[in-house]
Length: 116
Image (cartoon, rainbow, N blue to C red; front, side, top):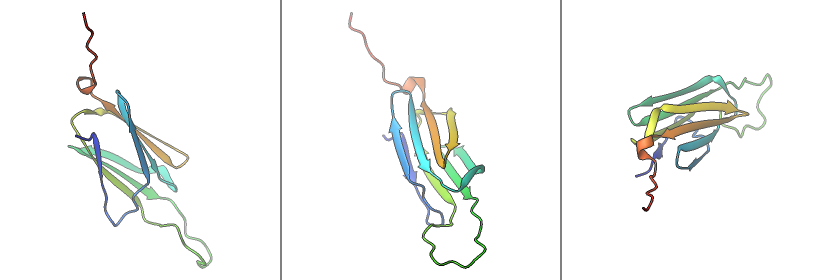
């Protein structure tokens, strides 16, 4: 079973995401330009890990000539399995990239058996 599955909603912009894992953690990196720390909300409810980011873009003083970037807020919802330690989730936001580190429970880590 996957450690992390994503769900999305249309009322929000879904941030681009890369997810990698090793034996001790899952690392999710999401692009969230225009979001400040104060605009981020990350919560775990059961198996749902929800990330919401509110943009802090200001409206221009003139009229729009070209508008290609979305002004919608970000949201991404992951389903995490029981191998993830809910108390071992940490986050950092640097240069518009949100990095979530999800620690894998000790009991879920692969065990190496030595041959005697």
